[in-house]
Image 1 (cartoon, rainbow, N blue to C red):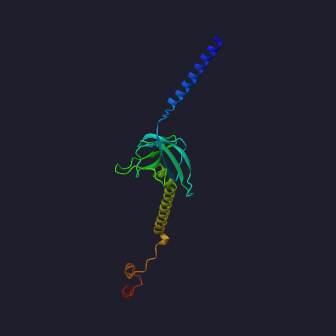
Image 2 (image 1 turned 180 degrees about the vertical axis):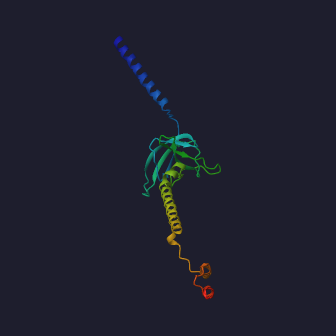
Length: 217
């Protein structure tokens, strides 16, 4: 009888320990068994840094997580992201979902905007049992997607400025070259002035006559 009593006691302590460990893990994971969730789909053109179990935040407040990331069944090149959020989250018809970066770690999360207070809540319908939130682009996503185009435009601008500077430099060097100056035409005024400035010859008719007269006895 004592041996059986010991086995029962050991079994009871073992079962209590297992239940305690399970309860600790449930508390540590912050699992709420009675919590209700709503599901929404979002179509993104790029999901860099996003994966399953990524956070979902409503106006910066964590309200859920990403439960599925896959290609759109429409084969339009978009990525279909399904999120699970707290049922009390007021997602509206004009709410915008974006992919935001968390610090410098490269980890991304889905941010949902509150929308306007006058807009209706986004509810499931017969056509769409899982409602779809309109996707937007964050500042970081806009920069990353537009970076190739901006870089190309910058390089083109630098090339154009370099060509313009080279043309201006070449034009200036041609103007400053002495071989580029056209010869000046012979001006009548300068030709007359040169004739006036020429000294008279010693064999002038007047002077030769006077010297002949003086030499005659």
